Length: 101
Image (tube, rainbow, N blue to C red; front, top):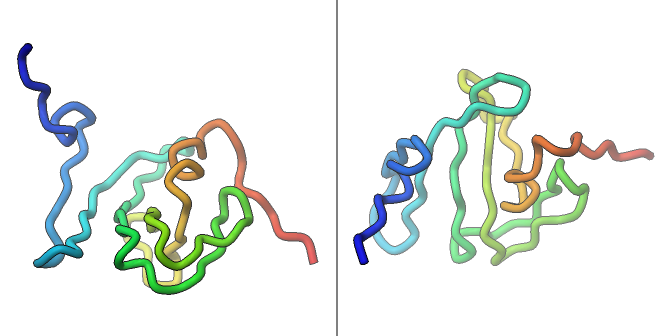
């Protein structure tokens, strides 16, 4: 059976190495459903140390859970959002959840 192409070649994403060692994280750019470009970074469970609120489902991303951090290209540190992987992948089929106080 022939080997598959690496994931980055299949989907056109170009990951960039940001660290060294076992806890390496990768960064790529993706086009969002709204047409904007986003920088997307995967965070392995071993590097997830804090709780975050996922804008896709409005539930917490717990420490130790692998997830995705995304922000608009050209955006700053305050524009970063932590998403569950499933919520990030399904964001084109549903809107962002709003928290009601």
